[in-house]
Amino acid sequence: MDFTLTAHQATLRDRAAAFVDGVCIPLELEAELNGGKVSAVSQQRVVDGAIAAGIVGAGHLREHGGAELSMVEQVIVQEELGRNTNAIWWLAPGAYNVLGLGTAEQVDRYLRPALRGELADAYAVTEREAGSDAAGIEGTALRQSDGSFRIVAEKWFVTTGDVADVFIVMVNVIDGDARLPTLFLVDRTTAGITFLDDPPFTHTYPHGHPTIAFDCTVTEQAVLGGPGNVGRGDALQNMWFVEERIHIAARCVGAMRRLLSESVQWTTGRSQGGARLFDHQGISFPLADSAADCAAARLLTYHVAQLMDDGADGKLVHGKAAMAKLFASEAANRCADRAVQAFGGRGYMRTTAAERLWRELRVDRIWEGTSEIQRLITARGLERRGVERMLSL
Image 1 (cartoon, helix red, strand yellow):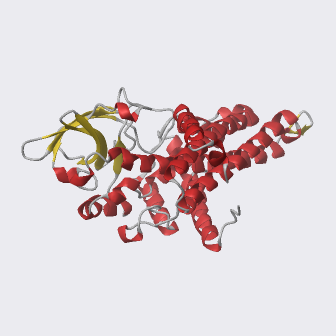
Image 2: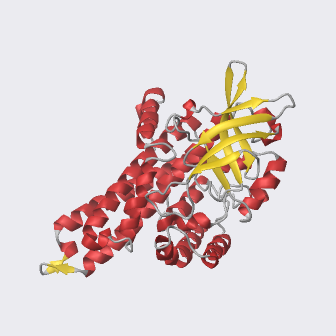
Image 3: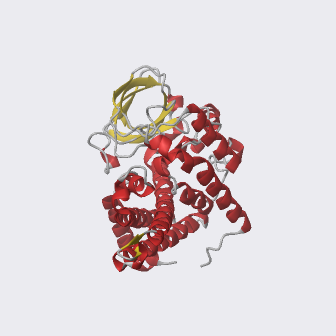
């Protein structure tokens, strides 16, 4: 299997890398020293830089304002974005993939403005008692006599919820004894939305992950994809999870590349005990382990992305995406810990990229499905699709 980039893919990588190196990385300290925030001028630089790089709306159709990249091409971009700490790239225009499945009116109202940088969306799925077990969601939508729905739910960890203009809310439509998982689009201006908490987290990213209560009424046209999509929330959400897991794996690969680059540069340029730090096997051997981790994670991630582009069995892709996220996120955490150790005291300074990535990468073993959930999915894949298919190239 040849993963040599085509000329088009190499150009895409170079544009994404130039955006990260020229726009995002120079803003990292500004963000770190200001709780994740950057100035309005800096934020506009990110928006303009992402648009110029042609990476806005990576997976969305060109007719909707997206870049319409294949999954391999998305991985190429995400890998470069992963080299950036503080998620500065997060400030670029974008939208969740499920918005592309909206009605024509929803696409015009939400997706196109989001890809122009005029609107922000947020995904509200996790609840107090429903994290890894999305099937345990208790939020409900009850149809009213006029055909509208009353949504009642409390959602936790709503990433970008503090600035979002629209929320993609997962709840169960109550239909007799049936509970039908459904995604709704709820405008921020809708009456009955209450922000309960906006807790600080380990990383310093541009936006928060607030806790939000919904007790509001929306029309049936608020169902993502239209009224006919009532009950299809799980299927739509699964598309999001698979894509996000592949993206996370790719960003972890990019983070490992940055950690290795800075660690090798530091340890080959600093001497202790009459020799370069790199010449001490206690330093260089862990970095060699990190190189192996990075290369393995990279190959697995590109393999899964190519399977998706080739139209492989969706359940097989689901299992392998879980495996890629599991390995890449666990490997990146090991790599970050080794890098901090190689930098010594400087590795514990927040002005060092190794320290920031050491904090930031920890969440990749939790969100979009914990490592334990990825192990569960992978194990089920071994049983249901077979060992050879799960390990095939």
